[in-house]
Length: 413
View 1 (spheres, rainbow, N blue to C red):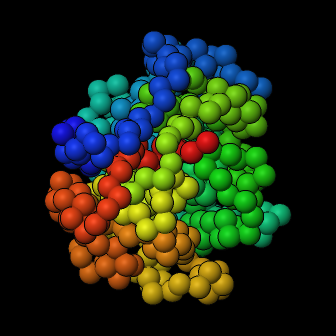
View 2: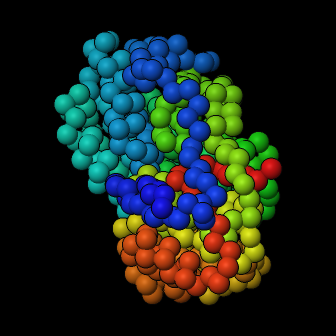
């Protein structure tokens, strides 16, 4: 037996796979993580690309808003915030004029762990923390993008004089790539704005890891420009969330540099034609709900046989994460999903597409009735899920394990 350990919520679980059945285990590529992330962030803040540095912006003594995405890992958020605060304190900037805006456009519920981590930090004490949820009424309209998205964002951002957006650069299954711009849309946007933007994913090519030519990404960049961000801080990370590089400065310049640094570290070559694929969403960064974790399955059909069994490890303590996963659960037709589009529609389309050729079992805390309405079986333990799948297959048990499905793109050459 081979003991395969996979992220699950804030812990890890193991699955015992007979060595004769194991095709391989796909781990994220590490790239070249920086030796000192703090020093890399501080240097980037003082040597920005095409914009003033943090300390130069602070000379005006105006209100500062630091925007962050509520799906980011707390340690990474704290590190970036501490570096910005440290830079501001060097010029004796009053901390009472600094607000941290936490955007939950991608998650239905607030990130209690993140807020508690910020609140308990001695260095960040005195900062005003404002949480924005996708259904918030405290929003301001900035106009409409060329693709027809009405840009409504958190009013606290608009009311600030200096706007700093921190983003984690990683693959995204709507925009191709996340970054500082996705902290504005979707993180700090209204539900209506998010749905209009996400609906564009049904109209053009959407490939994880590729932002060029992506209609969702183009719309996000235009919306972020309308929000007039003064400083974009892009934290380029590998599949494990480790910092590879930091790019600060103007929106477009930092994004181009971030894409160069990111390169192809998200891609992993695998042997295809697996009979069973076990994939973890990647732990608590992704598996707090189904809407954010189901994208771990996006590339699985390309590496699995027709009729394969797929096991997804996703804790889903916050439930489905998008109304569309329940409201549209019985819709199988793509045109109908487009016509009735709401947040979760594309996730339903992904699930239904996979179910046409494979079966899906989820190891999760998700109530059975919610998953089963989508056609997904539920198990409570990983080993029990694997045992049941193996027993149900008369032949073909070649098993592939993917440890970080939401931040890795497996491909078969």
